[in-house]
Amino acid sequence: MKNKASLFILLFAVSVCQLLNAEEVFKGKWIDLTHDFTDKAVYWPTAESFKMEAASKGYTKAGFYYEANNFSAAEHGGTHIDAPIHFYENRHTVDQIPIEQLIGAGIVIKVAEKTAKNRNYQFSVEDILNWEKTNGKIPEDTIVLIDTGSAQFWPDREKYMGTRERGPDAVAKLKFPGIHPDAAAFLANKRKIKAVGLDSPSIDFGGSKLFKTHQILFEKNIPGFENVANLDKLPATGFTVIALPMKIKDGSGAPLRIVAFLPE
Image (cartoon, rainbow, N blue to C red; front, side, top):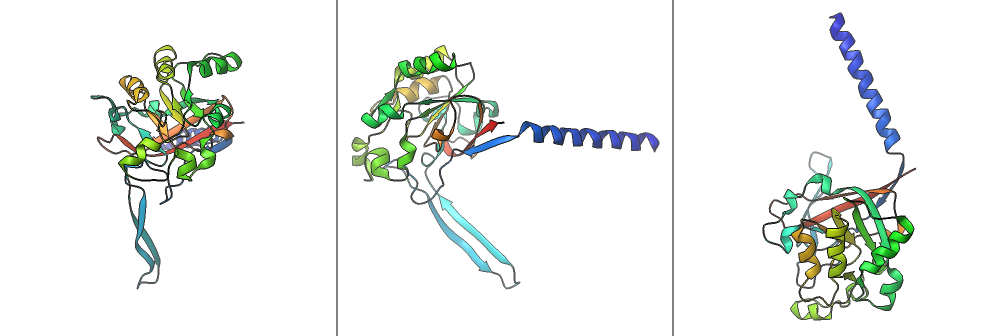
């Protein structure tokens, strides 16, 4: 009994130390990078928008309050993840993306000044190299976020994506920033990043017809985060990204809850 008691005290002490260490580790600031999912959330013109309806709401006969809702939406809309299978055969589906690829050190490259002059601006290799002149070479396995300044327009569809129209004909009117295929290839092959995200509806720019950036990144099993929020609140470096999607088996995309942690 004495040995069991000693073991219990030891395990308890270890647990307390781990808890205290966890509190020390998470001293800092959390930034939510996720837009609310509502009927106003921005979705692709041909995709089903987010809908929520009350299934039950109010006090029961037993006297306690109960509320539950039903929701539906396309995989790709609002703040969401593009799984590599979305544009490349035999690559990761949402449920196959390793957790460690969705959590890690992040950086932000800001190009809002350029997109203000050209809403179809394509983030370039030059933008990456200019950022590196100040902040150093992007380490391997970094999560790269691109602040195009677009989040300020959310959820105004016309300002955010070029049109408020719906349906196939609206796709030709889309106008928003994206990543140039050359920059995608550079990030994938020269910097070997593990994920990329930005504050626009697509990692390809609004006028894209072939979605080459999707194809280049997804061939390397690099997922994309789209419609990310609050990137203007992040420093260039020194934070951790946690981007966990709804785990949809065989999904090509999913709603995403993405946050950043800035340690003290």
